[in-house]
Length: 154
Image 1 (cartoon, helix red, strand yellow):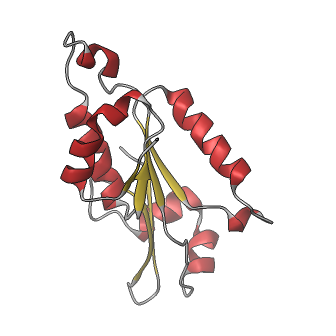
Image 2 (cartoon, one colour):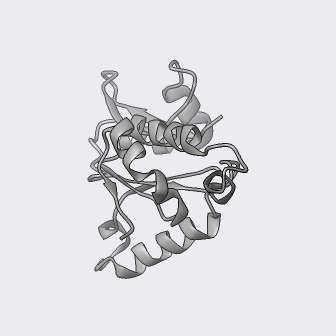
């Protein structure tokens, strides 16, 4: 299960959807169980604005994504927590080795990276960063298949 949060107001209008979940019926009841009733009710009549979401296709060397996220936070001219860039990180280290795929000794990571991009797309990210240097070998295929703007490392 991938953790997700979906909040709706009293009229059933969706306010926030963060992440992905396999069960489309998953709504406020599960949020109440996980977040507590007071959290849901506090937001029940408010529209929550998160700004444009940055997606990070990580996990290919988990420290690369961690380093990227740390630098993003440090370089953002934020005066308070709420001034930072909203980010969703997809980090699945089980993506096949990029090095082995490049030397033709291993499975291509492309289908796995595309699956990660699909999840980020479903989370409504505006663009994607890929902190892994080697993953940029498949940059054109990733960009063309996803239709998302992908920030190039160079």
